[in-house]
Length: 358
Image 1 (cartoon, rainbow, N blue to C red):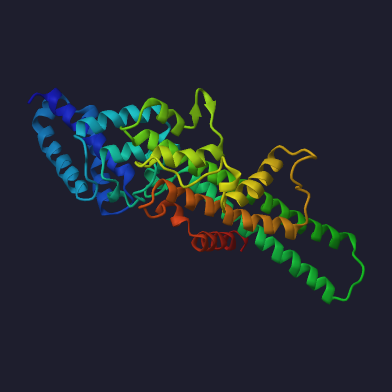
Image 2 (image 1 turned 45 degrees about the vertical axis):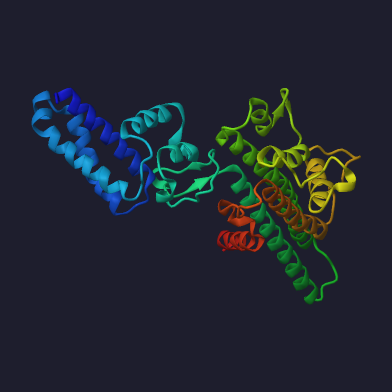
């Protein structure tokens, strides 16, 4: 083996270990790799051909031992050479340092279970690297988290508004001075603001969730034609498909039996929670985004807005669950979305808000 071949092998194994080091959380494996990365890089860049021939093989053996050690945790699905080639290409074409690596890319080359991530993440989810290792994100997940945080914020502001009002009543003051009016008015506005945004986000979550499922099927399925793939990506004959239509047809396109238990095109066959979601949550969302006097009323008292927010959360979760079951009757709800468990999601959000307002 000549010096150039040894150097190339060193470069490949160094780049592979660099990728592994970016993916794993701090620990013994990462420390062992870190300890050799810089000196090896210096050797590759500066060693003469003679030095490569005399010391390169020994150094290469150390790198291979580290690769074997890391493979106990992260199992490869492809040869190192192919992984390194694709990683270099990926890092040149995408800003992986800020937005991470697509989960689909990782699952193509590695067994994802070794990274401590949810194994049911969609392929377009982004996996953090470096200081963000061990974390992953996808749009429907943070829209769902936003929804519950906004609800928790609205509920917190509502409690503050009532508490402040009761304090003033207990003070036996029958007059409302300017400062009191401004304080109550601000709290009133905060309840309405967070509640409105909660309604917007709950509707946005459903749309993102439905689109994510369609896109995932379009990406992973090899048994569908181009027309079906286009529909699962949200268009037909270059026209966007409405959310209502997607909710009805996607289960037909995804299920092997070609059936859908969701019927929205016939008013008589519409069922809950789709009726409430479309007639209240989505209507309020549309009116808030494209308001005009003839649309749903959005100038409402704080208690009314809070009620709408609370119902919107239930409506959206209900639609997401029914849609998931319609597409995947035999699967558990997605773990990367806390299995769509309202109590868990609400508790997580409440704890987050408590930390922020301390």
